[in-house]
Length: 305
Ligand code: AMP
Image (cartoon, rainbow, N blue to C red; front, side, top):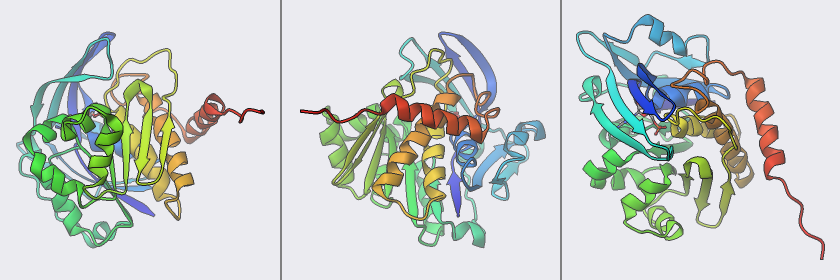
């Protein structure tokens, strides 16, 4: 089973209350691919500029990540994002976004990529997400992530995109922003009415809410003492979540719950250091161990009357 992802491979400059990192590795597809590759083979579709050196590409090597779909454009610059966080680490303030090579990226998928089993449309403009979706032949599962920039500037395109996918991974604030509905439960129902079967609402340090037509599941975030940089937590969550699902035969309620915990586990590692510094050093054994910690954290028995 493999998973195809389209999204950004980027350079980020990040400031948090605990420090800053200039021009470090980032991008929605970068975090996603590393996280998903713990469970399944990943086909990465993205574009980089001349400034993205072999030492940067090395982050993907030695993992289960196929780079046939990673294009380099000579004489152009890599996607760049500058973000800042205050003491509320759930809220990223975007200071600068340079699409650069992504402004007119029109990937042509090869036959293997078109036949992917699972497709993840990571955060990037919805036209590119749809371009890739329409080249694929009926994946078993299609999921999409987005952000406030595209909700502001491409609302209609995004609404159409929501109607074509099975699952949407989205932040709590973005759910409210998209629907203009303050009540989160009502807002998720509005998005589900557009077409997706499942909505995964990321709530930062408060965890995740999984909502489908007939079921709802809530998971807390792993209680960490040291959170340095929340950048990429959402994409890492999506990578753990979908990577795990792609490795399973069926998408059942039980598997969706396990996937939610794997996503949360992976995301909890990402935020412990800047950029991809923590995610790149962990092993599958670390992931499995924290999954078990999560289980004891959330387990409780029914009461006896
Ligand atoms: P998150 O998981 O939401 O924290 O995603 C952080 C990553 O998203 C950063 O590494 C950025 O490079 C990337 N990013 C920021 N803005 C955008 C955007 N408008 N489109 C695609 N990727 C973005």
